[in-house]
Image 1 (cartoon, rainbow, N blue to C red):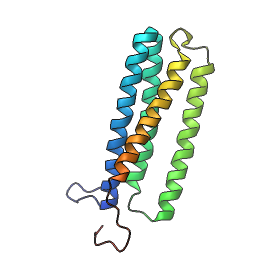
Image 2: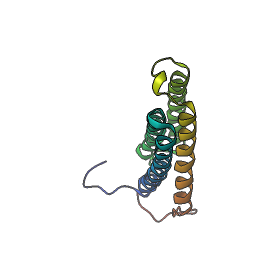
Image 3: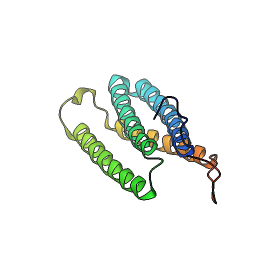
Length: 147
């Protein structure tokens, strides 16, 4: 994007969704990391922190792709989104499998913290994003906005 050029309405909407998701995801992460560090000690803290980081990076990358292609045709947006999602899910699945089944880091591994934190961060990210989406002004008919 040009530094002197204002972002299009579609890009601004995608950016608002990213900011809302980041706020919700971080809120869920803070709750889980704090809770698991208090109740499961260092293994809970490390496991929860890494799971939260993985989930936040996963969603930030996906929403970043949405921002990049926000002004493209619907077909390009769909193909790019699906390719990004498949790649991210595959990498996240491999990382979770390795972290839960591997013997490395087993002294600092707390599987309930990993699974719970990942789920809470995902749910809180999506809830915040849904809330922000409901508040977006998206034209239904002919738009008077200029890209």
